[in-house]
Length: 278
Length: 114
Image (cartoon, rainbow over all chains, first blue to last red; front, side):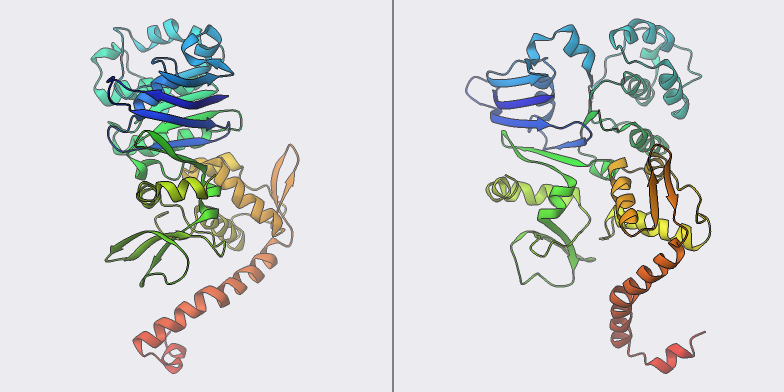
């Protein structure tokens, strides 16, 4: 449904941010889009949703260029940005104004999500709410649109501790085979149990894009009291709890995917990872 | 549940289901919790729970009745006993013995432990 091929882009004529990004997304997965500060995660999401135009290559939604922004494309996507814009409206007014753009919008779900996040009794204007409260309203709305492609940029930023857990529960119930969800985040500890596909953007390229199953099939995440002797070791981190390692999974042992270790291993082994996950 | 350990999440959920059945919380012949219910309870991706349920089906502990849901098999407790015993001997006993050696504990001390 969503495909980026050889996308090039730069804000500055002389410095390319992307020099040929390829990214294909499959429905039924919750993608974690990871990258360092300034890697261009938000820019990439803007290109995907037609808010920025690629300078070369293609960004396609259902086979059509994203920048066409047809009504059909726009009603299939919801992009919850990190810095949210909220108009001077009450929750009910906001729903009345914006829900009609989304044919699968569910009022029942919206009310239920607001209730779960304890926002159902908020009668004032949304732009007067605290940052976290605005975020909760926008998350509830974004999910209630039931779009095939939901994109959230740092959704857990600004959420209080209990709401992070509620958010995970809502997302666990939300994911299904038809939907594609992309969450761009640095807060991997908030979301690692929900993410079941990982995309890592680094130095203008997508250096890894694979489902968690494929990743743990190819890589072994290990804690040991000594360094591995056999097989290729991609990353090592010595801690008082033991030596954390990311190794080639030669013996097909199942291990728990650790997103932080994976990220560090990927940025240090770009070439090898591209080969390994071809 | 602490997912930071090296055990995969789907195996932790699989073990949790074993415990539910062995403790009698889930009874043979009864309906198992749905994939979505468990995903929400554990705050994990439903695909992860599905993977646990597929393994439990292959172990003949639960059965998928099309359109209705998953059910606990009649002989599930016996099946789990056999699986857990095998795991215990293969994984937990070697670890236990290693700690005994490290701490210089002999079997007499263990027998008189309780």
